[in-house]
Length: 438
Image (tube, rainbow, N blue to C red; front, side, top):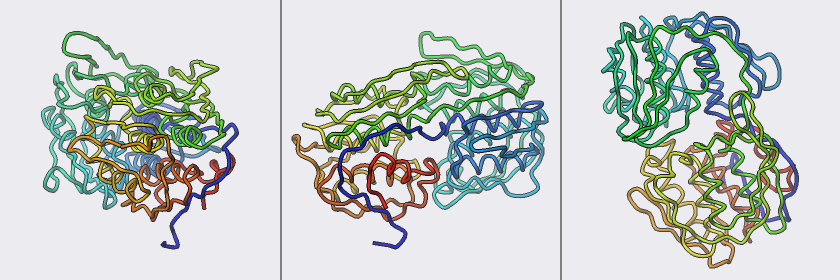
């Protein structure tokens, strides 16, 4: 194995209480809206992972003053507008960051060039660029709208745009552009996606109307609204909390509590699915913080059964299918995950990567064009023992490292460095619970 790899070794029960890193989706939005707002925004609990730090640096390049004031505490001084960057804006590996920033920047009379790492430059941007083009933004990019791309913004007009597929990133980009467009912008989503942008826009003083009706939800925002700086408290990321919770479910004798987890109903599809599989998963101390529901989630080792995950649930757990596939490897009977074709255009082709990684650990899977079926072990634990090629994808690395503590043989991943993208301090947190990962 490469010297930079990580190995998760079999061990005893996992026990303890931990706090997940701040929610990545909310962290990105807090920085971007803070830069768009007038005055000071104080952010508590910001995820200090590589993706979010790239967004912080991008907001500096667009004219905001962004500074770290303490551990996970940040301050943004916005000017109520974005200015033209002096250099290329490098968003690293962050698809969420670049798509939302492109939407926000499109509303201003500026030209900006965006790039990213090899993975991000290979990911499609047309689904964001098309509606922004309808609003009046101009852009020049590689084939398929891929980075690097140059955007010329300003002079936007409002549109009514129906999402061709569920995407909170596209919805958010259009709404952010709509803030600076002439008229009222409407986004129609046939299936609900995470609504952090709508919630946070209201927290910054904007009026956002949401109507549920025939044909889906309609989100309306009038152009010309001014945002005011505010205080944002970032809850724990349910996508990150999923890893220690899943490790507890599949490691005999384990009981783990993750505190302060975001419980937005548009983000908890994994928890619903795990309960359907028979997981002993309890939520206590539910409360509201910063306009979002949060709570403490406890997972205990459970005997699990395979299920078929409804395709309509995908938007509420799209980032959690890799860790669900690992849990499914410990279940009795097959688990079918369908309607998840979007996973093929994430940081990697996550359907193919999970199938290959699980196969390396002795788990039988069946890959489909827009789905994955994990056979399950009939109640027996997967063997482990594989070296998993992650192709630079943090969720592939994290998911397979979670498989290791409960398997008879160690599981290794070849490129763990990118874990800091979403879960800085992962190995230390897991060590606190008793896992041997190093």
